[in-house]
Length: 352
Ligand SMILES: Nc1nc2c(ncn2[C@@H]2O[C@H](COP(=O)(O)OP(=O)(O)O)[C@@H](O)[C@H]2O)c(=O)[nH]1
Ligand SMILES: [Mg+2]
Image (cartoon, rainbow, N blue to C red; front, side, top):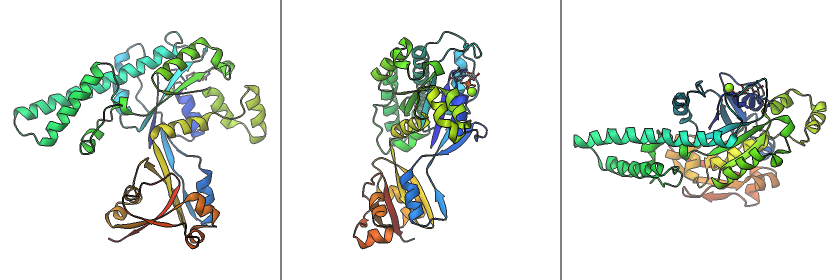
């Protein structure tokens, strides 16, 4: 899944990307595995030769734009549509070495983004409505086109009132039509307040942080705090010096795992596993079925789906592996509509 890092220039976006990628990003893209100890235990137990964890793909590759010309943000935003989640970095550090174009005001910056998302979605909707109207004039439309028009019209009205598109339910049959629009106001969002080292740990006392925190709470937006330069420098510190380095700023751990978890939670996904010589972790939307899981592994498995053998990771681990779990009657046979649970280990029976 693609996670787009977004920021007003000089907010610390690229510094955070360097911290997340450990300097291994290329062209602003870095694939970073999700920490998943349970999966590594399963793979080890299965004697796997090939181990493929789930990775999130972090993107710090939006086209440059000029904060003193806000309209130049449209193009980067059209690129951000292709991502699965947005991480908004807002600046809450002062630094004479990185002069900001204006005062430090994270609430103002966050509002700027939320407004731009609304405007950007509005533009997409209006363009599409216009095209559909042309189609209607030539009487070539299908029932699907009519249904799409009605839904987009409801969306237009929501945005007109300043509301995001999150609450609007998209019927399953229209979902494929709308997927390509990548509405920004429907995307999962995590806000990162990038604070200076001196503020780390003391942020609750900072009025601008209090305002940001209150604003995010009122908008039900997930917020977390870190210091991007500190996180980046922490990556370069040796294992022995790590504790000392952390203690210097009063932290016990890096805050990056917390960021990854926050993003993961917002994505509304779960993991499932296939184990053996080749052991893999896979992502599936919460509520996904055994058939969806099969299709995630390979379209053939969905096409020829017969049954899924399913067992929880905990039971597989507790019984010494898949065969042990089978002997203990922990492996169940499930049909295509079985709703997958986080941490299920599956073996798909299929026939094509
Ligand atoms: N003091 C301080 N400086 C930072 C922090 N994060 C970024 N910077 C500095 O701000 C400047 C711009 O950072 P960069 O990551 O390139 O910002 P971007 O334009 O949002 O990608 C650089 O000089 C960074 O060293 C931070 O947390 N504290
Ligand atoms: Mg940058």
